[in-house]
Length: 408
Image 1 (cartoon, rainbow, N blue to C red):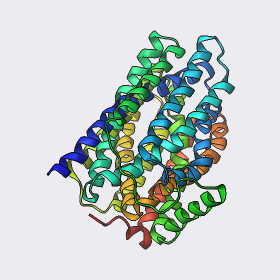
Image 2 (cartoon, rainbow, N blue to C red; image 1 turned 90 degrees about the vertical axis):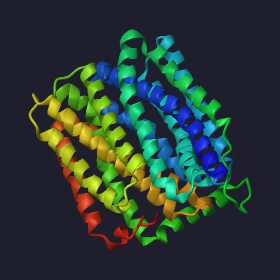
Image 3 (tube, one colour; image 1 turned 90 degrees about the horizontal axis):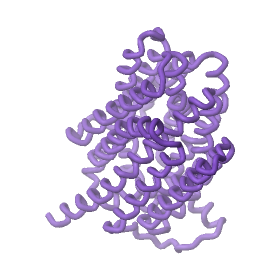
């Protein structure tokens, strides 16, 4: 009983810190989106901002995973949070000084991405070291709930903040959230997996260790195919996610509060999806959930581009459905990896996943920004939504994928 209560107390501290950090980051991220959208009104500007925020993590992510598996994961998360806060502080100071260069914004987003490349995999890799395997899906669902509440309150807070304060002041919220997250981790002991690997590694050794992570995926045929299909899906999903504000502004004729409503409703949908997993712990195989969510998500996104411009509230409803599917999809996929991969390889495998997902996404964003400006944002939603549906259908037909995630 003491052991059971112990892991729950650990997660309570982690969740409190992460909640404060996520809600502040969500507010700041949305405020930056509003600022870029209103100041520039270009899909390409938003696409380049998204690329800056993802590409560095995609490039260094696999090597970051190697060191995450060697280093103390708690300290890695704390240092990563601190580095991201420092980058945000630099950006805030630049706005205070009246220097609102897109180049500087892109540079700081890129450096924040470097910190995220270490923080997220370390966080995901720590979960199986704290909680019993039977609780992984439920914990993933609760994590989705926390992210969802942040996604609900964050945009509303961000829209309010950007209306009352300058963008430089709004950025300070993210720094405060990072400080709370770091302090919360001070009260938690996170065990590291037993390993015979040395704490320090040369680049050659890091490459060798990275290949061990690749081998862990390649040796599992179902996991290999799942990575392929999810990479294709992410190639389509992420550009659409970046273009949501412009669909609201340019196609549905909304403003900053309509943008906020869409983001809040997305968060409500994610809260519902995460709650379903956290409370009910469904017995449906995780891969079935992943594939089904691909299909539903693709349909809702395509319909968002098909409906007339005067049906904004139908778009809001479709966004809620998309949020539900995204929460269930993310939690289910995370759980499949946590169940299929050995703890000592978990950090590098999660890093590989983020890189495998991000690199094609960046390629997609390079073309999508231009295509959205040229062909119309709504048409991009229609086409990419159809591709996402096909990914889900084809995954159902793959026997190797369908054999995954059936533990617990």
